[in-house]
Length: 296
Ligand code: ATP
Figure (cartoon, rainbow, N blue to C red):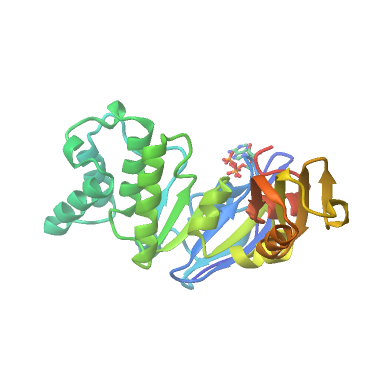
């Protein structure tokens, strides 16, 4: 289990992290979701022991000193600024990180082969990382973080700036890591990723956690109702008496039961040309909590 208590980190006058407390259970996929500059990377680095907080504390499975080798070997970190060496081949990178974590002998060879397969780079194992595309570099970066089979993976925006194919590959692999029981701490500003992967999400903004719960609970609490927008070819009977905003040929209804609302329109003889049902999502949660959109 990872516990953080009142973490703070400032750079000059800027409070990058301003009192963050978290509790992440073993085997959980935990997301830090927030816009650029919210303090996600700084928080992740403090949790992983990569930077020291100005104040506050972190413990991983009860251990408070992140420099101890037991702690170091239990965690892997895939930083946003890639940690791989461009002048080394894919295989040499994996070998380097594996040795750093004390792997040797047949286990070293097995894990390097695993890492190449995981990254989809077995065929390119002799090529220098500097020649790889952004997506290939990110895949290798992730494999290097996992080569020693850590119990906890800290993953900082692993899909940022990569092509859709690599993004899908990386995402599938991270889901595999989750299924294998690894604890995941995952930062992203893509709410679809947090929604799909994470058991629990902390919404982070301006160095603080605004809410921290399961995705469903956050949406129930802060997401508001579904919106049904129907454009008619034949307007329903008595259209102006319908709940919602009616504008010439389009009706917009806010409801917690979108399908029941649609059935009622059918009962009144409506013929619908276009239909849009917008379920509440984490974007709406963020908007509700901050008054801004995630990607403003
Ligand atoms: P992003 O996704 O853009 O990395 P983030 O949520 O991860 O955003 P952080 O990288 O933690 O945010 O940065 C939080 C704030 O702290 C930002 O305003 C950033 O400019 C600032 N910051 C982070 N590291 C440093 C540093 N070493 N020196 C000065 N300012 C920093």
